[in-house]
Length: 25
Image (cartoon, rainbow, N blue to C red):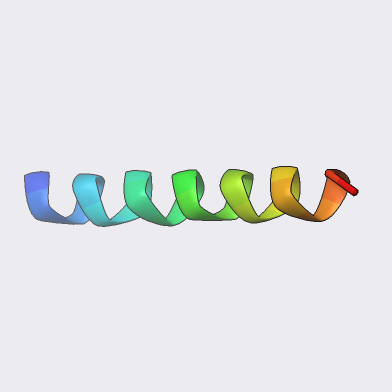
């Protein structure tokens, strides 16, 4: 299930990135 893990990691990373962008002015 490495593919699933990678996809989940990408999803989490994207979510964190989006949150950071929203937090930034």
